[in-house]
Every structure is written in structure tokens, then in C-alpha cells.
Length: 204
Length: 269
Image (cartoon, rainbow over the protein chains, first blue to last red):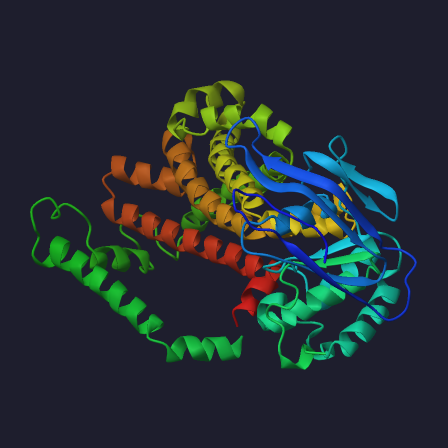
């Protein structure tokens, strides 16, 4: 258990539970050190995070749980680079990611799977999955398509590669989004309500 | 396509449409020709107008068999086409940039919002002063109306894109140009096409006003000239023609939109 704790005016603390995964990846270690976040400090002064500290090792599977408004999303958004923090530091592989003076830039090394889904509705499943590596120049569209088809096959989604997100179920959309994240080989994969919408086929 | 047409005919929609149309024509006939209700008795009825429209030897010189009729249609259509293309080419990129870059919007939005409410008729004197000849002045007036509708809708389209797509794009390593072409443009398309339909409507509206004031040819000119020459059935012919062309041009925009936004059509299929 880590001593992640909260705010937003609620006397509750987000709790982190983690499990070491198979293998030993060399990167992806996150250190959250005494992080606080206050929204609207000159006005409503809402304290979302108060002196939160948490260490997540490389390859570790960590779940942050807590009631609504306890600061889980704020913490994950700060790591993603969507929010600044009021004090403290966050490190990724011992490199400063963000602090009071530095906002992290969002990047493919810290992919987010969003709570309500963020597949581009105007792109097919395949185009969504290949978009990251192609725009980053890591793969040609041909290579990316081949890798994406393999990944979609593993996820049991090969039959819907040319469908649009609006044509598939919410569980499938969730899996596509995870596949899109994994195509980028991120150091850190963060999911909001990670197993929401996933069906029985994905239990394992 | 065939499947959709079959579905359409199987639904009550086409029959309700025909019923509504018949009801309208019947009411028009009763008011103007059969009952001759006060205030309506001077208006041309549907039977007189259609008879003139389909006549090989029209009493007032305008029917589907006279070449002048098509010259008027072509002149109006070509003016709208030029104005609409110009408004789309300028309005869509401007709206996209205004929605994408807040600083650019801060510069341009107050000007747009000040100029937009000015009625097209108020622009007529300036248009005549600015452009040599009537033709360019009419096209300019038509362009202005279409331009404001297109720009504003495109801007709203960009602003309506959910922030989560921008966040997802940045997470996936998209650079600003990728965000523009892969998120901003496709995300704004539904609003852009709504704007184009509105812009086509207001373009026809402005064109007719412009042609009435300064035209030599065109359906607006035909309406006004027929009023002066007391050829009332021709007014109705030109109005119905305008209605059909306006409807067809909006349908063409919707068709192009459905091709470019296959994801929306297929998403709800």
C-alpha cells in the first residue's frame, strides 16, 4: 500500500494496490513525491491532492482506488501532462517529469486509456490503432498495419478492423483503445476505470 | 443505396411528404382560384402557373420550352456557384484557424461578429461602389452572406470537438499539424457541412435580392421584372424554380457530406 492521499474537501484517501508483473521491464518506474494540487488557489481553493507520495516500480501493475472526488484523476492527469501540480515532483525513470515549475508534456511513453473512450470516431479501428506509431515516424503505414492486425487478432478484434468505432460495442471499443495504446509500446499505460466495459472474453 | 431506397419507400415518410405537398397545393388553389378569398384573389393560382410553365406557347414568354428560362436559371446558378465556392474556400480555413488558435480568434472574432449582423441589402451601395459592373457586385453580395454562415459554423465545429480527442492525440505523439489534419478537420466536418447547407440557402437569398436590385438576367431579375410587367404567373414559375434549385443544391451538399463523413452514416447504420 502506498500513502497516496487526497483532497477535494473530502476526508478520504485514494489507495494504491500493486502487483509485480512477469518479466522485469527496465523502464517505466514512477516516483510521486509529496505532490499537492490545489484548483483555483485564489478563489474556491479546492485541494484535490495533499502531499501525495507513491512509488511504482517498472513493470508493476498498480491500481489507485478511492471514492469520487478523492483526486485519482488529478493524479493520473498530472502524470499524463494534462494538469500542472501545485507542489512536489513526479519522476519517470528518475527523470523529472513535472513539478511546481514544470508541466509534463503529454507523450507516447505515458499513454492514457480514457474513462469514456477517446477513439477517433472518424477513423476506422485500424486507422485508430496505427495512428500513434505512424505520426511518430516509428513505423511506415504498411508496417504499422501489419503489426496492428496482429495485435487486433490477439485481442479478438481482427474482424472489426475496418469498422468505425460507432459501429462496435463499448467493450470492443475499450479493447481497441487498449490495443491502440499498446501499439506505442509505452513505458506507462494508465487507464481510467481500466476494466470498465470489458466483457467476459477479456477477464484474463 | 438500393436497400436504403427500399427502406425509404417502406417507411411512411414519402407518403407523408406527398400528402403535405398535395395539401399545400390544394389550399393554394382554393384560396386563389376556387374561393378567390380577399387578399389572395390577385395572386396567381397553381393551375394558371403550371399551365404557363408547361406551355409550348407561353402567354408571358417564359416556360420550360423557352431558352430564356434556362438563361435565367444558368445565370443565377453560376453566380451562386462562384460565390459559394469562394465562401467555402475562404470561410472554412478561416473558421478552422479561428477555432484552433485562440489568439487568432481573439483578433478576428470581434470583426466577424460586427460585420455578420449587417443585412445584405445594406451592403448594396458599397458593393456597387467597390466592383465594376453589376455582375461582380451581385456575386460579392452573395459571397458575403455565404461566407459568414460558413465561417461561423466551421468555428463552432472546431469548438464542439471534445477535449478528450485532443488529449488522446497528444498522448499518441501527434504534432500540431497532425492534430489539425487528423482531429480538427474531421472533427469539425459535421458542423462544416451544416454550415455549407445554411450558406447555400442564404446565398440564394442574397442573390435574388441582388438580382432584383441590379440584375440583367437571373431568377431574381425575372421575378422583379415580371412584377413590373404584371406577368404574375411568371413570378410563381421563378419562385418554384428557385425552390427546386435551392433544394437540389442543399441535397448535393448533403450527399457530398455523407461521402466525406462515412463514419457518421455507417455509425448509425
